Amino acid sequence: MDDGPSGPSFFLARARLRPVRSDDHAWMGAALRQARAAGRKGEVPIGAIVVVSGRVIGRGANRPVGACDPTAHAEVTALRRAARTSRNYRLGGATLYVTLEPCLMCLGAMVHARIHRLVYGARDPKIGATRLLRQARAARLNHRFDVTGEVRAGECASLLREFFRKKRRVRNPS
Image (cartoon, rainbow, N blue to C red; front, top):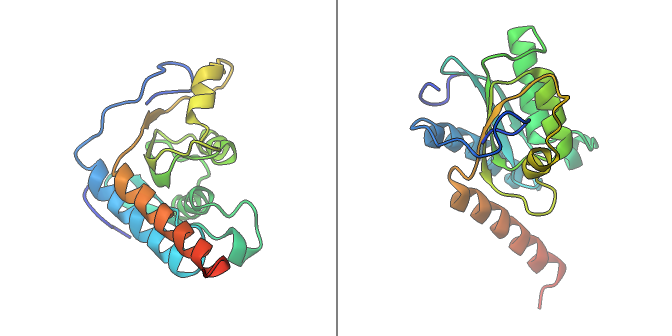
């Protein structure tokens, strides 16, 4: 399942984004491939991968429409597959790469999975939740992980913009 080279903190300990690591760009490329696959199927193009020890153990492409499942976000799908691969719902040491800043539901799944690190591409000004959790300083959470944001943000945002531009053209062909 290898898809690339081996592989800022909220949840209270640190409130700033962590620096980008050299392999983050390559792994985000793998997440972008998942996003493009979702877009080809008519889903919002968001992709995610879970990496442990330089190996992809879970992949996910956004699929709530096709799966008739509001929880079928790319992050949740990738976490489910990673848990199945590792035969453990706890994914200590895992880094989750996703093309769009996660929503609150997906961040909750990451806390429960006990990931080590989150790396996201484009910011989501509407429902992206990393800043909400930082601001809330939810000190009672029993798990913390580092967050690195805006890795290949331009590519990730461009993919989303183009998808919605095409959707609007189909609806309003003027």
